[in-house]
Amino acid sequence: MPRLPSRSTGALDFAALSQWRERSLFLLQGNFVSLHYSHQKPTVWSEQKHAEAEVMVLFAPAVCHLRWRSGGEAGSEVTIRGPAVCLIPPGLSHVPRWECEAELIVLYLDLVLFKPIDGGVKVLNSLDEPTFFTADDLIVWPFFSSLRHLLRLHSSLEKGYLDALGTVAAGHLFRGMYVTLGENVSATTLSRQKLRSITDYIQANLARPLQVQDLANKAGVSRTHFAEVFKNTTRFSPYEYITRCRVLRAQDLLATGELRIREVAEAVGFCDQSHLTRHFKKLLGYSPKVEATRGRESQIPS
Image (tube, rainbow, N blue to C red; front, side):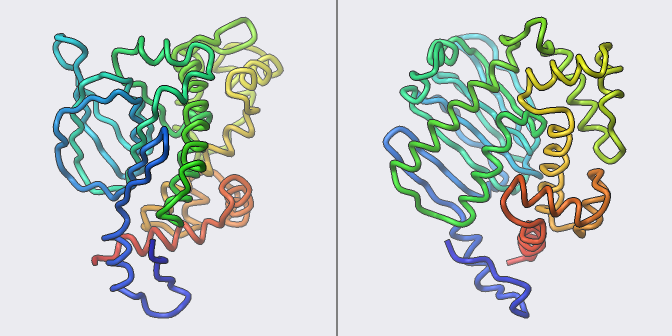
């Protein structure tokens, strides 16, 4: 993939930017994984169903109206807005309709990748509708967010490496499904409904100071007990979870190219730009300046 033109080199190279856009559509094929990366334009795909598990990764500002039907039953429809991940089970007939242009990753994962996971294939085959993960699902989203960064840098990957990515993706999706489907509920974890209530509250209040005690009060338990059950459920402490949510929200805002880094830092609840930069680099491995530059350049007409 051509390197994106950099503002640090002076005037933007519009020809290079146009070339990058034209070539930012490619297919990678492994032994058990097919991966499509593109800037999806407004269109309607034909009805389709696959023997593999299909994973659509939508980045802001993507909007997809997804219609599906199971067997001979009447169809259902839902609107998905990026950032989000949609897992479509094998054999499910579906029709995606894309509303606007946006980055999109689609993976087709052979069921063999789910066989090492206890009950993996059985759970997939039992699903009769898509499963959705949003940016607050920190088990699933960080992996696919990092995958986007990888695909922006490389338009080819070795088959073995691609299959390894598919194995990791299957593991993250299955772990995420356990939380989504409520399979892990116990006395030491949060129920699906309570977890969703807490994470929705966090997402809605990222710009303001969030205290663990506030979340514990919302859950109706003590601060100490809440911190324990929250980490048992999500694998992150409340502070780690909130910080990751802020970084991922900042990544999406910077990718639009509409805000400065300091404005984004304030919008997602960091003290200042340096505070955002430190956590951004720690989680994603590169600076917010890189994301901001890409975002600005992607807005320039080709």
